[in-house]
Amino acid sequence: MRSGIGTACLIGLCLAAAAWPAAPGLAVTEANFLVKTTGDLIDLCATPKGEPLYTAAVNFCEGFMVGAYRYHTVSAQAEGGKPLVCPPNPPPSRNETVERFIAWGRGNPAVMDKPPVEGMFEFLAQAYPCPK
Image 1 (spheres, rainbow, N blue to C red):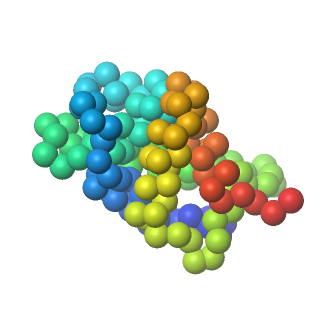
Image 2: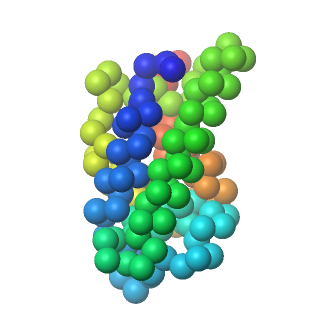
């Protein structure tokens, strides 16, 4: 894996997201698990403790994000391509990354309707751009 956000960081990203409060009045539903949008992914990642689907949501979030990120790193390496994401070394804390992802998505309503992988990598590329 290239330097940058490691698997442990992304795993923690999703676990720490559970501590981030969801938008008032918005509870995660089974429909969020279809993960059709970035908004669905953010809602899953931000599910607060005490919600009935908390454990399932956080575990799904973790698996989705780690899987997408790992696929990207392997694909970029295999194709000799440049990665889309280049976090600093050492990478930011998991909590910081989660807070930034959730805040970024909620602060950019237009991104909430994008496909979840697109929204996730748009955030990561803006937050941790690669040198040109």
